[in-house]
Figure (cartoon, rainbow, N blue to C red):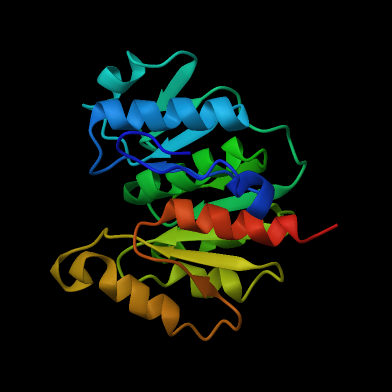
Length: 217
C-alpha cells in the first residue's frame, strides 16, 4: 500500500499474526495520521508508538476514534483485537521505568492479551518480588523492565519456569551509560534462557511475547 510518503504493509497481519505498527518518531503529524488511518482501514484498527505528548493533540485532531496514552506514548485507532485469554505479567523494577513498561502493556493490550502489572519491585527491596511470585507464576510469559544495573530479570528468571523477556531501560546515573550497563548485565545473566531486547524497547518485548503465545495451542 503506497502513500505519498510511506509504503505500508497491510498484509503483515495475515502473514505474521500481528499488524504493522507505526513508529511515530521522525514522522510529521500528517504522515503519522495518514499511516494510522490507512492501517486501521486495512486491519480494522491500528497502533502507533513513540508519539510525544506535545504532538498528540495535533495527530488526534486528524483522526476519528483515536485514543492516546501519555505514559506509554502510544496512539490506538479503533478497538483492540478480541481477547486471546492469554496472560502476560509485566514486572517493573522502579517507577522511573514506567514509560517502557507502559509501552509494552499498551502493545499487548492492543493485541488482545491480558496484562498483569507488578510494579516497583526492584532488587533494592528483594522481598517485594518474593511476595508477588504467585502472580508471576500464573502468567504464560513474564516481561521484566529494569534500569540501573539490570539485575531484576536474573532474579525473576531464576524463580519462574515460563519464558522471561528482559527489557533494559536508560534509567540510571552516569555509569549506567544510558541503559548499556543494564543491557550488558541482562545479556550476561546466569538465569538460563533469558531473552533480552534493546534498550527502552517495550514494544519489542511485547511482540516477542506475542510471538511466543501465538505458537501455543
